[in-house]
Each structure stands twice: as C-alpha cells, then as structure tokens.
Image (cartoon, rainbow, N blue to C red; front, side, top):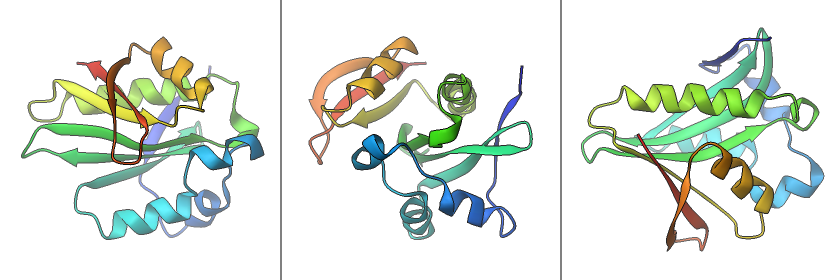
Length: 147
C-alpha cells in the first residue's frame, strides 16, 4: 500500500497544487488551493502541506494552529478528483490527526463543512469526529474530534 505523507509545498511543486481540482460536483465545497495558499501567506496561524501518495501529489491540507489558545482547526482539506476513492483521504487525515496530537495542549481538533456536503460529513463521522451542534461564522456545521 502506498505511503501517505504531508510535505511542504515548494517552488518546484507549487504548480501541481495550483492545478489540482476536486470533482466538479465538489467545487462549491472547497476553495481552490491557490486561494488557500494566498490566505496562508497573510495568516500567522496557517499551516499547510501537500498530501503525497508515495512521490505523487494527491491533495492539500491547511490547518489553523493557535498554540497560545490550544485551538486546532482543519481549515481546508481536499483530495484531487482523479485520486479520490483510493483511501488517500482517510490515510491523510490519520497523518493530520497524528500531527495535531503532538502540538502543545492539543485536546480537540475541529473542522466544519457545508450542510449540503453530506459526503464530507459521513467521511468525518467515520474518522471519529462528532457534530458540536454549532455552526461557524460562515454557517458551516462544526465537528470535533477529541484527542
């Protein structure tokens, strides 16, 4: 089985991540990677990585890491359209969770999704996330994983 890793995006790999897209029916659910990388450049709390299967870029993740408040949030997560349904998403999330667990005072990991994105909701539930009963400032459903 292919190893999944989270790697820094470099000037040599950037174009691959900028061109990466989700399925057309998922476009409304996740921002383009270029927008996420631009936001990260102006947000001190942003941490982002390319998701690799072996040596192949297959996805993107961006976290909001606020160590001073011990608040950790999956801000963006995507697997490229042609790489979905191969188990990469689940393995990548395991790596993300493993990373957050070692951060200072990490007790919870949050994320959110649009109510209409039932596929994402089911995926996150399968990983142990639960709904908090709250919505974020954009009206997305909040979920939490107790670490």
